[in-house]
Amino acid sequence: MQTVYGSPSDDNARIIGEWFAAQTKRPVHPPFSAIGWVVDQQLCGAAIFNDYNGSNIELHIFAVDERVTRQMIVDVFDYVFVRANCNRLTAKPYRKNKAVRKFAERLGFAYEATLKNYYGPTRGDDALVYRMDRATAERWLQSNVPPIQSRDSSTDRAVAHAVSTS
Image 1 (cartoon, rainbow, N blue to C red):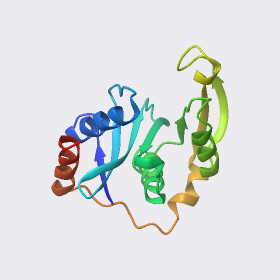
Image 2: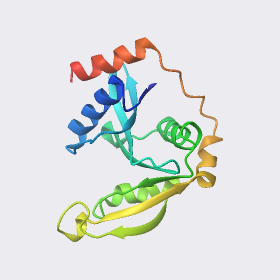
Image 3: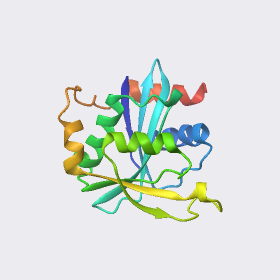
Image 4: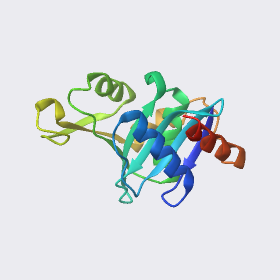
């Protein structure tokens, strides 16, 4: 699996964001940064980061067949807590998405608040705010997963190819 980074000003973020939006049927609004994961020149997962304020950043993540791998988790936490030097990471799943909420809790995210009617008019459309802090993420950052691959032009071409053939 190759890891590809996209910053708000480059084509990788745009391509990964378009793929994420198509997969989730939810728009991605700039500015945002992104991580894409590529297997056999096809995107198989994406993380979108927005609302960065120097201390916190918000995460939206999607993986094909709901297969978020250990490498994806480590890549996300490395990006947030090492590269962006944030103190916390925020996720806001729908109340009705119990699978995502349970997954977040297993990773170590802590429930923080409920935002009523955040995604729509029903109770299931409430957003539940979860946070991950640097200390909790350390167990993932110290795991035995190899370091993130550096970005290269062949990976950039793989992302472009993945989007153009989907």
